[in-house]
Length: 88
Image 1 (cartoon, one colour):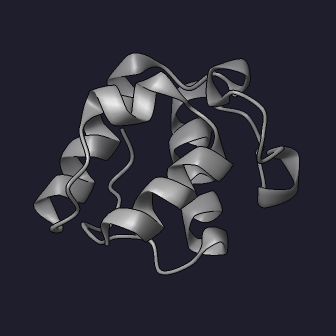
Image 2 (image 1 turned 60 degrees about the vertical axis):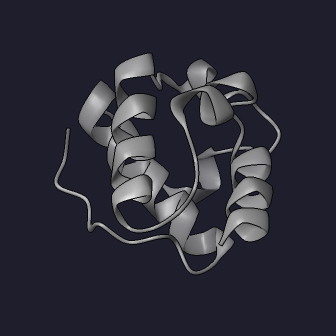
């Protein structure tokens, strides 16, 4: 997985950017922020459980109370942003 900064995204655009980095690494495709529908499952774009697990670890290390189960249960940008906002 690409080296991501161990930080919690500050806004939805930063979260999109983080996800694009992960998706590019996972799929070797040219994703950008505009390619991701906020309500579409990230699995549709190629996000795998390993990448979700790594993200949960990165964010927990940065101080966010989030688990793999939290993220995988509703794997959309919109749901993850709501989760980050409520647990920050």
